[in-house]
Image (cartoon, rainbow, N blue to C red; front, side):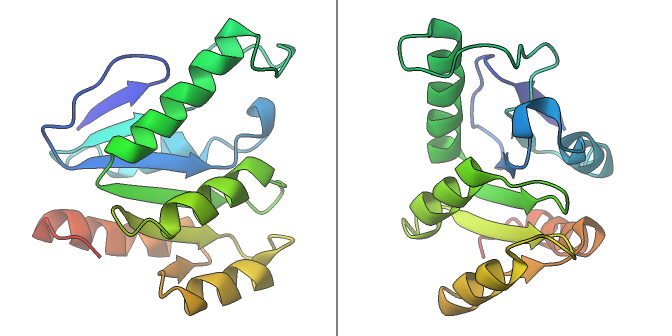
Length: 158
């Protein structure tokens, strides 16, 4: 497994997974690290937007070069991925994750899995959205990881 964190360069010569979801300026649980650990034995590339050294006090404007670099890295990495995993952590709001799910789930050029942890405040909306668009939705990361490993092992797209 090869993990690439923002804003580092990457290539997509292997099956590539982007970890989209709750970060909330670093306040959300680090579910990305949990996923990486559970997939560490697989021959995949994981694109992880969670930086080890993110400064949550940065002004979030297009004129801020660090912020712009992060957003552009995330957008291009999602476009490059074979599969995007969206995780809506129980105790987060994740407004950008909602936007990203809407954008990338309707493109149908990339496979999508969604995990809305049990108790997420808009779980019902996500359940309905995913059912409508035939997107697999899980209520625990562990259950999602079981199917994700099957997808990777069979090297297929959803």
